[in-house]
Image 1 (cartoon, rainbow, N blue to C red):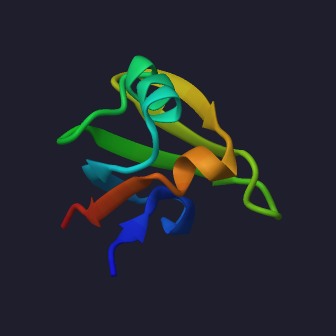
Image 2 (spheres, rainbow, N blue to C red; image 1 turned 90 degrees about the vertical axis):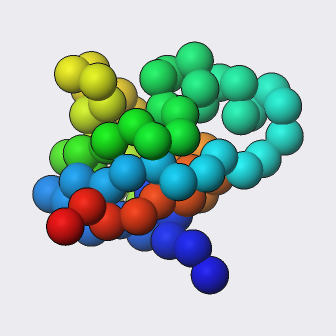
Length: 77
């Protein structure tokens, strides 16, 4: 089973491996600059996991929990 962005620990830098989900939601994630191979820094996760705040390509973004669950990641060593 793959790890998702929702499960990433605060302060970690991860790489996007795959996007799941249907067309509209997947397109929204891609419009934010989150695509396969992108490096993402996890800045903050709200106590209940919504939102997940990340830095992508120099931009600070907030992702809803359901979107973060659609981004499969790998830890960067």
